[in-house]
Length: 187
Image (tube, rainbow, N blue to C red; front, top):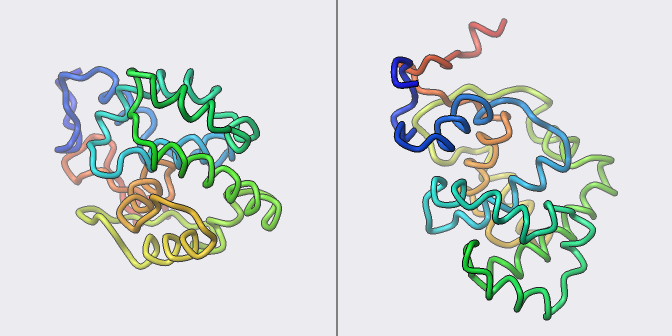
């Protein structure tokens, strides 16, 4: 595991993190259920490390009904209190309420565009963006502003940039990483 060079941020002592880096991060996955899951998880990252959220991912999956968008969009006060009591997840009332709100808006976007990925493609023309060393961009600024205008919470430009990296719209492996590639290599 340690013989391969990885991105600087990857904690090599955390198997979950290494597996995420090697098999998931920046890999295109545009299925709406995955796009929704990652949006929920990224919104919980605000003010915390991604490693912290990733370590709790399976507990989030259980607590949030396997990231079932229909169930989450119908959560009530009783479910919010249940989540607030769950010591295995990040217990932030504003983020929990935002996940319910964002689920409803995600569904509205799906209705409008057919899929959430079609919505994202409207900003990228379906292209992968290759860049490293950034935490925001014009792309993340524009998507963030639009999502906020639609009423989503915890979707600032930095969160959206991380999200776009997570789902493979922005490809950001460091140059010394064994997974590095750039747009010239893709042609």
